[in-house]
Amino acid sequence: MNIREDLLKMLNEYTDGRITQVNPDDVLTSDLGLNSFELFDLICMIEEKYGITIPDRILPTLVTVKDVVTYLEENAK
Image 1 (cartoon, rainbow, N blue to C red):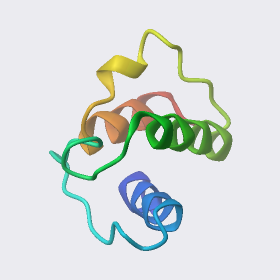
Image 2 (image 1 turned 90 degrees about the horizontal axis):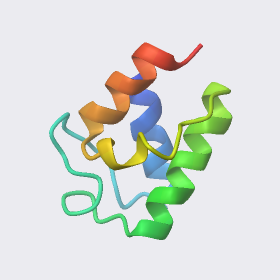
Image 3 (image 1 turned 45 degrees about the horizontal axis):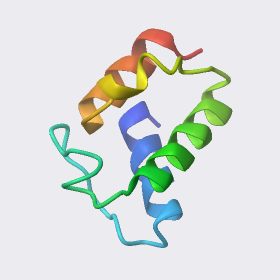
Image 4 (image 1 turned 60 degrees about the vertical axis):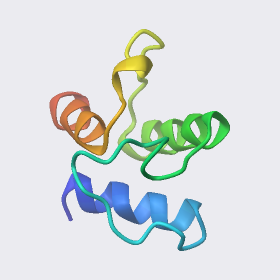
């Protein structure tokens, strides 16, 4: 399974099936409907799954699905 598929699976589980597909350019908040609390929760899930810590200074740059996938490809184990 690749990172994008992992992310989709996490989003699908987290939103109780509300999100069933994602496109690379989908904005996590406006397109996928995540609020700031949900986004924070998702980041925590990603950190736990991949065994990384995403620095606070990076969080504002993770706007789209592609941003998250690219960051994980470059920084995850």
